[in-house]
Length: 544
Ligand code: ADP
Image (cartoon, rainbow, N blue to C red):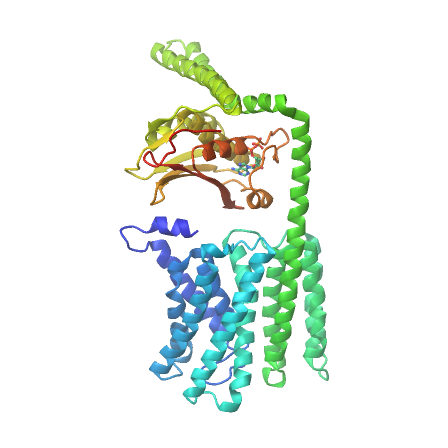
């Protein structure tokens, strides 16, 4: 997403999209601050539930560091709009700078590429990074904030321990409940599966809240453990995404129940501490369940791949690869031949158009022959023929070959090539083959999922250093998560008639040119991108 954002930035000015996201964040921040302003300690309002902190961290993780300045603006705006600046202006600015600075540092740390943290939260490591950083940042913000307020005599000396604990719990629970939930929502992942069974744990949750708050004699903290049942149920049955949704619902219902029961009689911080334990337990169980599911799915794919590979054998692998690579020109030949027949059947035969079609058929036949030659060289560890090609030229041929097929399926193909890109030094046929493969996969994914308004976009840009980045994005169902997490391996396919060779062959080709291929995207579409060194940077020869 960061990439999308920077691409939108023109002439050094942030794009309209940047301002729209920033303003939406400010509106959400103020609204959530208003909703969560329960049981405040001191005029400044140390509250035991701060979902706003979670939203701030999610903003930077999802959209990039360019949004860090907004983390300072939002608390200032909320204090002005909702509480008419309860502190003197210099105190207000000191506290907001301390909080904004702490969480900006936390978000900056999490987004450092060296840390390898992924906002997709696909592994235990990512979750531990997020929660660990949140715990430390909340401790720094709470201690710093309360001591600042105390030095200004806004919080009395004996309120310090209560203030620090309340603040820490409030911020920590805000991040634990809101950040993973928002990250999943913003990345287009669905939170709850559409299954009737899900109604049962939610009914159990409402029942548990009635029992916890219903009995006037008992302290709600004593029966709080009842809420573990529905949350763990959802975590075990439906995994991490669903448990983040369940925790958000639990938190909102809990705060509503506290408000209805009367906040003065109940220790909200104590309940929120229990809620924090519940949230941490739920997230960890959800993560373990999701990880186990992905591992099972991956194992299944590997077993299938292994079976297919052993059936195919060494000689068969060559045949399979040839069949796969040759399929593309054959499809194009079929399409052109049909166009030619249609033209010949017409009363007034348009000779020029028939000649053009025939020439295109000849070109494809030559291409098929060249593919076989190349495959023999490629698999037989031969070397490739390099030439200096302009990027638009490199994209044009596979684009025109695929277009007829795509139009037949109602899929739109767009290209966006940055102007004045440096040339690349490549084996033209190989790279055209890679682009053709990826576009064909995208088209199959779109038609396979029955998507209407299918769209594929080929983009080419300079990475600012010595590489050209070519990305092919579609609006199909996206890669299965297990395919995204692991390196591309041959014979891995989800298609009944697939061979699972296209991506791995393409990756070998790109690597042999000194580039890198990466898979990305989400449930709203897949993105395959690869890099090619510019002509000045290209390796002297290609070895396979
Ligand atoms: P094959 O097309 O024979 O299955 P590939 O190596 O080309 O082999 O692709 C491997 C798998 O990657 C496919 O089975 C499919 O699940 C997935 N895949 C490839 N491209 C896309 C895409 N654009 N959208 C969704 N999934 C894709």
